Image 1 (spheres, rainbow, N blue to C red):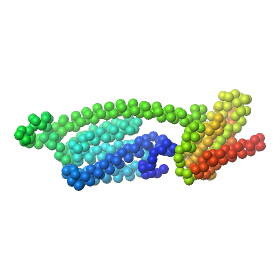
Image 2 (image 1 turned 90 degrees about the vertical axis):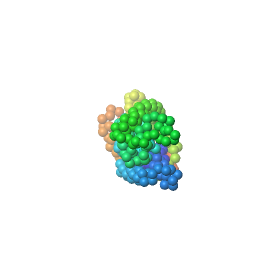
Image 3 (image 1 turned 120 degrees about the vertical axis):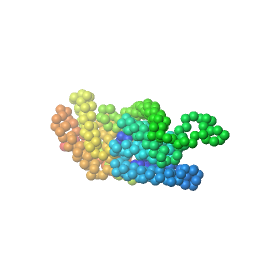
Image 4 (image 1 turned 135 degrees about the horizontal axis):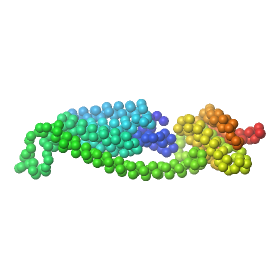
Length: 380
C-alpha cells in the first residue's frame, strides 16, 4: 500500500502493515497535524475578514511559513514512508516548528500550544522521542519569547513587565506604566522563559507518568489478544484467528492464493516414537512454513488449521507465487529430512482465485493436498 493511501485510508486490523512499529501512530499524528493546519487556515480566513483584529501582515507571514512547512513535511513522509524509523521524528519536528511559527507570530494567543510536541510524543513508546520533544519545547519557549517580542504581535505584559494586579497599575482610568522594558534579554528570560520552562518540565513529567500507565494497560491488552490468536506449539496463527480473518471484509475481486499442508505419518510417529516426537514433527514442519513466509512480504499469513494441517494465505497471490512458495519449502525440508531420525514430510496443495470465494479456494487447496497425499502413498 502506498504511503499516500496509508495516510488517508481507514486503519484496519487485517492489514499487516499497520502492525509495524509506530505506523499507526505516525498516521494518527499526521492527521492530527493536518486538522491543526485546517483550523489555522480557518482562523486565518476569519482574520482576513476582520472577524479577528490581529495584524494581517504578521498573521499572513506565519501562515505562509506554516504552509511551506506542511508541504516539506508531506514530501518528506512520502519519500521516507510512514514505516521508516525517522518518520516519528519528522512528525514531532513538524509539530515543533509549527508551534515555533505560530508562537513567534501570534505570541500570547498561542501560549498553550507550546506543549503540543510533548503531548504528541506521548502517542509513541520511545523515550528518546519523548526527550527530543521536551528539548524541542524548551527551545521553542526561548525562541518564540524573544522572536515574538521583537517581530510578533506585541505582548504588552512583556513590553511593560507588569507584576501586580490592574488596580495597582491604573488611576482614574489611566494606565500608570508607560516605560518600555529596558533590559528584555534578562527580564524575558527571568519572567517568561525560565518559569514557562519549569511548567513545561512539570507537564513533561506528569505526561510521561500518565502515558506510561496507559501504555502498560494497552500493551497488556495487546499481549492477551496476540496470545489468543497464536498457536503455542508452532508459533503460527491458530484456527480461530483464521476464521476471524475470513469474516473481515476484503476486496471481493482481489486475487488470493492458498497453500494447504498436512503432515504425513503423524499417527505412525505417535505410535512408534511417542507423542512427544509427534509434537516435534508438527513443530518442525510448521517451522519451515513459518520460515518461508517470513522471507516474503508482510502480507502473507500462516495458520495452524487443524492438529497437523496448515494454511497459508497469500494476498494478490498467483499460481506462480504459490508454486514458488512450495518449491522453497521443499528445499528447506530436504536437509531436515536427511538428518531426522523420524520420518518427516507433509503433503501440500494449492489453489488460486478471488477473495469473494476464499472459503471455496481453501477447500480446493485441501482437495489438491489429498491428491498429493494419495500420490505419495502410491509411490511408497
